[in-house]
Amino acid sequence: MLLKIVIFLGFFYVFIIRYLYCIYIFQLNHYELRKYFKWLYKNKTNKRIIVPSLISLISLILLLLNIKEPLVYHQGILMIISLFFIHFKQEKKKLKFTNRMIRLIIAFFILLVSSSIGCLYLLPQDYSWEDTVLALAIINNFLIYDIFMLSHLLVLPIEGYLYDYYVKKAREKIFNHNNLQVVGITGSFGKTSTKVIVGEILKKEYNVCITPQSYNTPMGLCITVNKYLRNIDEFLVCEMGACRVGDIQELCHIVFPNIGIITSIGPQHLETFGNLTNIIKTKFELVESLPKGALAILNYDNYYIRNYRIKNDVKVLTYGIEQENVDYYALNIKYDQNGSTFEVRYPNGERSLFKTKLLGKHNISNILAGIVLADYLNINKRKVIHLISTLEPVKHRLELKRFPHYCLIDDSFNANYEGFNNALDILNQFKNTRIIITPGLIELGTEQYTMNYRIGEKIARCTDYVVLVGKKQTKPIYNALIDNQYPSSSIYVTNSFEDGFKHILSKFQSDFTVLLENDLPDQYNES
Image (tube, rainbow, N blue to C red; front, side, top):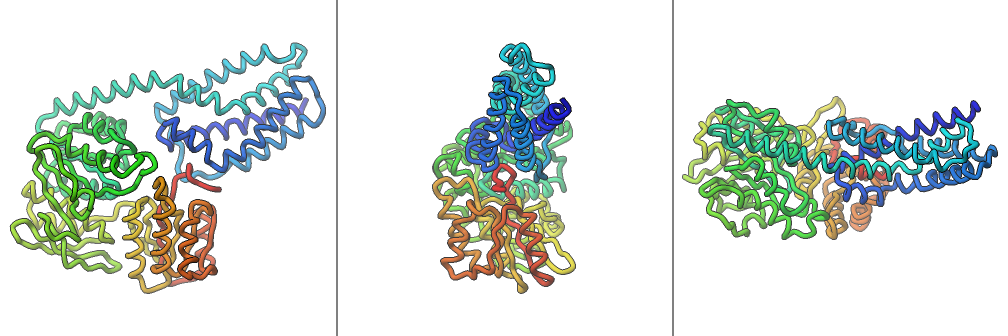
């Protein structure tokens, strides 16, 4: 009896670990079953679950046949050990127990109890209570993913109702707000940094509400408006994200922007969009949702933005670093380890000199978008120049951190091709040993191999040592390095950033710079 109790407690413990990991990944996938199914199918960790799941099934069959040999318990113990090592690990982010997550958990346990009651009628009548409890533990461990998915379907109507309620509430608050100007910012990359820069500039003259962190989804915007927007606010600055056609239009129908900024267009999320044409169309949903005569601020360095024909009547102001034929042009750009200096040529030909702590060409481009808006609003140029000089890097986006024996360029939140290239250009300027830790780029669809291979070619030119995170997903980069005669002794392949960083600290003692590029969330982890 004691052994059965121990096994039951083990099953219960394993069940909780599996369930928490299950809902954690579901949350990372934005509560979308399609993305979750894809993860469940592809994720290496869950393929390993097949074996212990089969063990639980065998144990269940033996229990149903009333075979009470020690083998049953040995199989149960084996399953517990297997699942413990698979699931018990430190995750990069913590599970957030939001109201939606709590509703999902409640629905899950209602179904769990119902399933257990139903299974009682299938078990032999002569089972002792400990055999019954053990059998239910085995059944529920085996059915955990089915029960979880049913619980999601159970709460979907509630989530739909709540979505409509919060959207309606946010719209009403926007409509009833006097003299509020809404700035929408989108792009394949650069939108978070641009949002922060624009927000900081506007704060010098106005009361401003800014979407926090990466609140760039419909519910993120609703939370911002309903919870953080004050009656005294004159500007609402919104970051707008998208994974498929119509996403930006949906966001525009919540906050109704009258100023739109498009920072970039590229193949990011190509896997979900299907093709580049859909990405272009979706990003320009922001501009084409603007009212007549509203302001669109566009980055004309981007080929797709520059060549798009806008279908509505808006005022367009353009900016660029590479394209001179723009309204606002950045020139005489100089970089060093302390930041950047550059000049801006205004539409009237006047020039101003700017200094910033921010690193990299694309940060200057993001700053330029803020300068365009500031000039349009007639904010004093001297104030803007001073503000730009005081801007701090956005966390985990080309954030330079100095330590006693080395420098760290933290670009771990970057996940796009252009930003990756820019980060390598910055690393290349350092005179000491140059090291990169990266898992490469993801969600590039059919371009996944090609673009990662190109990144690998540039890594070969700009670094002295490479740590690749994830053997499968970094294969294109590895192949490019070898094809470019990069010494294999200078390549280290691992399954985690933590192990990669420990390896670097043990191998290099001092005078080196590490670029941390694109730390992928746990649903892409190969370990």
